[in-house]
Image (cartoon, rainbow, N blue to C red; front, side, top):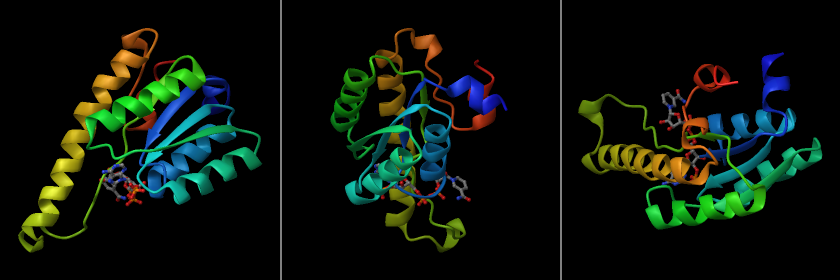
Length: 151
Ligand SMILES: NC(=O)c1ccc[n+]([C@@H]2O[C@H](COP(=O)([O-])OP(=O)(O)OC[C@H]3O[C@@H](n4cnc5c(N)ncnc54)[C@H](OP(=O)(O)O)[C@@H]3O)[C@@H](O)[C@H]2O)c1
């Protein structure tokens, strides 16, 4: 399977790794032998994901981070780089999705959704390009189809 051979030994940052799509993505990378840095705000949930990865023989690094805070993102990427030596893949997944028609959303909720998406994109993209050995080699697309095509 493409996943198994291509990502063994790769270093991966997953934002929003504490639940949902990010959690499952982190577990999938861990299961094929990637070294995975787990970012999100809830430390306990990240630690639970890390335990699951370790239980299956993988390696995970818990980095509680608010992705809307660029300093926190920078610190997390530095910590991941220091631990792993390089960063190969960034899954820029953290986000807030409130499933309701725009016309029914409270303004504050809409602001949170948009703010999280835009700030996480800017901060993570900046750090992705600065933390990888070769900026063009560090894929940070948000879908498996995009980044599997890199290797
Ligand atoms: N599920 C869908 O149908 C769907 C459809 C379209 C797009 N998406 C997008 O896909 C992504 C994942 O969705 P999901 O369904 O897996 O959602 P989810 O289960 O609610 O997970 C969202 C993740 O983002 C993290 N997060 C939210 N705000 C954050 C912040 N400021 N800093 C750091 N981490 C933050 C959460 O962790 P903490 O709370 O621990 O910080 C959590 O790990 C989101 O970006 C969402 O907008 C999902």
